Amino acid sequence: MAGHSQFKNIMFRKGAQDKKRAKIFTKIIRELTVAAREGLPDPDSNPRLRSAILAAREANMPRDTTERAIKRGAGEDGGESYEAVRYEGRGPGGVALIVEALTDNRNRTASAVRAAFAKFGGALGADGSVSFLFSRQGMIHYPPKAATADQMLEAAIDAGAEDCTSDPKGHDIVTKPDTFHQVKAALEAKFGAPESAEVAWQPQNTVQVRDDQAETLVKLLTALDDDDDVQNVFGNYEVSDELMSRLSA
Image (cartoon, rainbow, N blue to C red; front, top):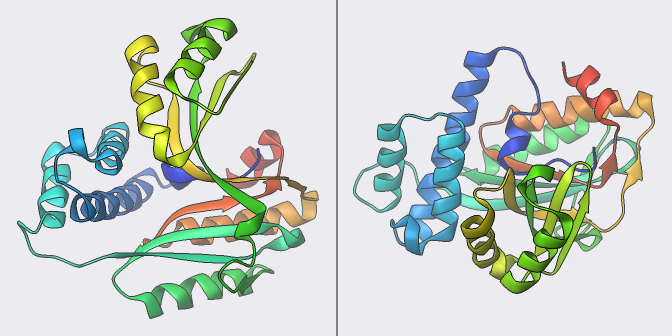
């Protein structure tokens, strides 16, 4: 497993399902609110809101909860005002981590993120201290049965994608951030909804983490995920799926 990102990262640990479900809802509600506030409250003309609504559906969030969050963001309801903040730092084994958060209190969030890094062998750095090791990309994944490799490649190129690779695990399409929704819509029209789709910080190279460091790294990722303010965590670490599953069980 290389890296750790977007709404899926909220769910990477199992256990305590009811409690985890509440945390997932909290994070998605914030994203819905901010997306509706920063753009139009109409998902057809607001790609970020459209993605947040999709995440809400995948998490089985009640429709009225989704609608209230959108109304709050559109100014039709009261509530907190959230802003996006980003933190960069190093974790166990020197891995680079980017933490994205939505918060109504920057001091509280910064303190909590800094404490998590310090507790589990990491340290926060200045803005730009590790982001140069990543590139911002749209990532779309389809299962193998969605199409043949040639069919997916041709469709991805026609849609304006940057790259498309296929292997036994499926098809991975890479886009520029500003063409992500355009490419995603074109592929959906041809192959249906993708298995996953996100705009994320992708590491240019990965760092292999030793087993003893991986345990501490998972604890750090868990602490960050458990913070309601934290939306996404991206890293350049390389940990096997088997080891990650065992440590996060």
